[in-house]
Image 1 (cartoon, rainbow, N blue to C red):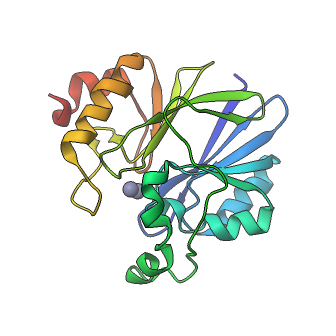
Image 2: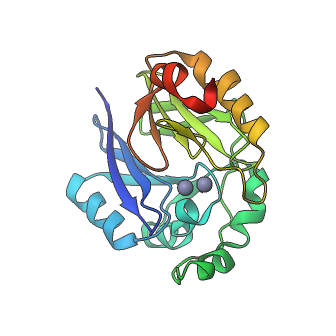
Length: 211
Ligand SMILES: [Zn+2]
Ligand SMILES: [Zn+2]
């Protein structure tokens, strides 16, 4: 399996920041560096990977708050989320202060992602799906070679993303899950923004929000 993943819980929200890499050449991406940069940098050191980019699933503080500083430290670009989350990235400092997160910085990504785009990490290729609902600009990454997806806060094991925050839309969220994610196949394992992993099949059968 050339795709490797390490999960690094960050911020007071215990957000699943992840390091994903191509085991063949150790080129990596940091997904959703919300904060706690020393922890992320330690994981990069322990795995011995070379980070070539930062990737964001959406613009919430626990996912994007540390991206600008990490970008500067590593000298890499930031890809994602969809530009519909720009209003959140423009206010990361403000929203961080609400939670006592003083290291957060506003962020202008180097590349906005759209439905149908490709995201590469080393030789790994992911399809990008725009999955609005939890936030307007949420995106999911689907691995082409292995049954694996990264879905941010769109879908969780036994739950779905909250939609009671500005930009949230519950009907749109359920539509994103049912029309874009679940049809990809029951066997696909997914990493979500909080809590344990699951598979699309497990959620299709047991998730009470998808009945
Ligand atoms: Zn979120
Ligand atoms: Zn989150």
